[in-house]
View 1 (tube, helix red, strand yellow):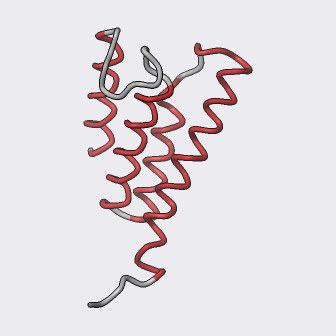
View 2: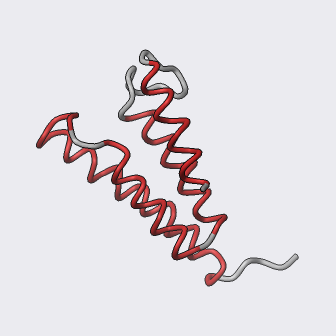
Length: 102
């Protein structure tokens, strides 16, 4: 069985680390300026840069991780996955996934 090389795995590492960094930055912004800051903008930039660096599959990984992170940490009720109090949050999550793939 052939193991993937570091060069093949690097874009996926960039995807995971960039989403983690965006999450830390966004949580820091929550404490400074509250929840009024544009939520999806930071994660959209992460998806764009990851897709540019790594291609389609690492970009898809960053979309999935971003959706899970946004849903868990920022959409109400917090700390739950795919359970929305607001219809707007559900629409935002769906549109983020669609536009991320495009």
